[in-house]
Length: 430
Image (tube, rainbow, N blue to C red):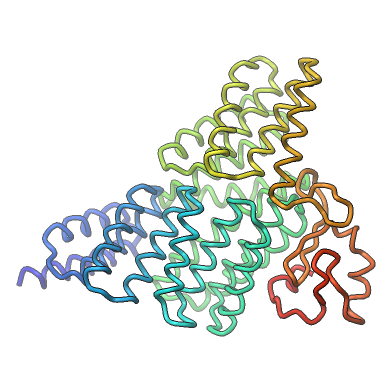
C-alpha cells in the first residue's frame, strides 16, 4: 500500500508541474523519493527532479540527481537507463561549463543507446553546445549535421528547432549577426507552428523554447542596431519568464537588457542590470553567462569613466573564469578589452601584447580564414560554412559560391568537393 501511495505522489508531482506549480512538484517528488524502494521508480523520479532543477536554475542539484541516476543504472545493469543517465549527466556538465566532461558523457550516451534512438540526437546537441563553449566550430557543425540527419529520420520538429537555434549560436559567436538572426527566427517560427499540435506536457516545453528563442533573437537585433525590436523581444521573454519563475531566462534577460541600455548610453542603468544578473548567475553556477555579464559590466563602467579600478578587477575575474572554462573567444574578448584600457592609459606596449594574445587565441580556435589568413569573429562579418564544415569569410570564397550551383567546387582548405557533400546543416547555411 505504501509503495502505491508513493507512485501516486509521483503522478501528483507531474500534474503539479504541468500546472506550473513547480516548487510544490519538487517538494512532492523529494518526499516520495525518501520512502521509495523500487529502483526503477527512483530512477524516473530522479529524472523528474533533475529536469525541474535544470528549469529552476539549480545546476548543481541537477548534477547530483544525474549522478544518482547513474548509480541506479549500473546497479540494474541496463544500457537504456545508462544512456538516459549519461545524457542527463552530460547536460548538467554542459550547463556548468565543464565542456570536456559533457562531451565525454555524451559519447557514453551514444555508446549505450541503440542506433537511431532519440537520445542520440540530444547527445549530439549537447556535444554541439559543448564544442561552442570550447570554440571548436568544425566539431559543432559535424555534431549538428548528425543531429539534423537523425531528426529528419524521426520527423521530429522539436529536435530540428533546437538544432537551428544552436546553429544561430554559432553565427552569433562568429559575429555574423544576420545569419544568427535568420536561424533563430526559423527556430521560433517552427516552435510556434509546433504549438498548435502540442500536448499539455509538450506545451510547457514549447512555451519555454519560445521565451528562450525570443531572448536569443534580441541579441543579433541589438547588434544590428534595431534596439526597438530587440527591446520588444527581451521584454516579452522576461515577462513570460517572470510569470513562471524561470530564473535562468530571467537572469539572461537582465544581461540582454543591460546590453541594450549600454547601446543607448544609459550606462548607470546598464550597470544595475548587469549586477543583478551576475548575482543570479553566480548562484546558478552558470559560468558562461556570468562571464558575458561581467564583460558587459566592464564596458558600462569604462563608458562611465569613474570606476577604472573596479572595471579592471571585474575584467580579471571574467578572464579567469573564461580561462577555467577553456573558452578562447571569451578570453580573446577580455584581452581586447584590456587592449582598449591600455590604449586609454597610453600603455602602448601592453596594448600591443593584449591584441597579439587575442589574435593568438583566434588562431588556436582555428578561426583564421584559410584564404586571407585574417581572424573570423573578431569583427562583424559574413561567414560561410561549406559542406565539409570548413569556414571562411564569405567575400573570400565569393567566386566559389557563385559557381557552386552550376558545377562541383572544391574547398580551398581540404580540397573536398563541396557540391556533392551530404551535409544538411551546412547546406542550410548557404
